[in-house]
Amino acid sequence: MISTSNLVRRFHVGDTVVHALDHLDLEIHEGDFVAVMGPSGSGKSTLMNILGCLDTPDEGDYHLLDQNISHMDDEALSRIRNHHIGFVFQSFHLLPRMTALDNTLLPFRYSDADVAGAREQGINMLKQLGLSDRMDHRPNQLSGGQRQRVAIARALVNSPPLLLADEPTGNLDSKTSVEIMELFTKLNSDGQTILMVTHEEEIAAYARRVIHMRDGKIERDEENT
Image 1: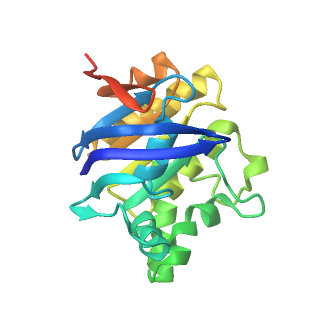
Image 2: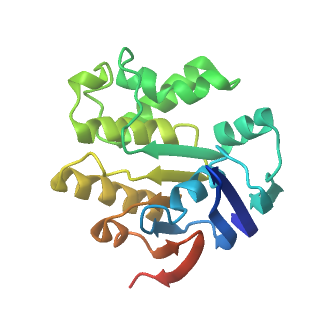
């Protein structure tokens, strides 16, 4: 599903050039559940941004679903994001004045989906995530775990092949974190490909594979047992 070759991303900090990604090679297959770990500055967020088509590399190639998207323009990248990638963030990023259902339906605003069909998909997704009685609630009426479930529903409502999660349990208590990770495990067992950035070993333990990064490179790539 994902293949990168010699991926390089540089940032200029004053007179210093920082290699956020340093000739990085990576393959992720359909159905993988991968956790990316590493200290601050290791490059994991930069990698997530490039894989999510939010940034582009300075050198190297990135193929997603057999498309080389390394040097696509912003409009093309936006189409890729909308059709092929779902995002889950630490801070949920829900719109405060919209209901759970309306937040879930946001990806359809940028597509030509049938309105009635999209609404039905949103309702079904929220039901699957245990939020059938919270569809008309706004984010400030929901718990942290419920807000993250709405964010997951929004990420998955148009059936993207790839789910990217950036510290998805970072704002949740331990019990709710376990609930969200068990949900991720179920999604993966149903075939969803998931790439997750986390700094917590106990969260990474839910993944099938753990990649450790340091100084823009992959230091270790291990299967979880």
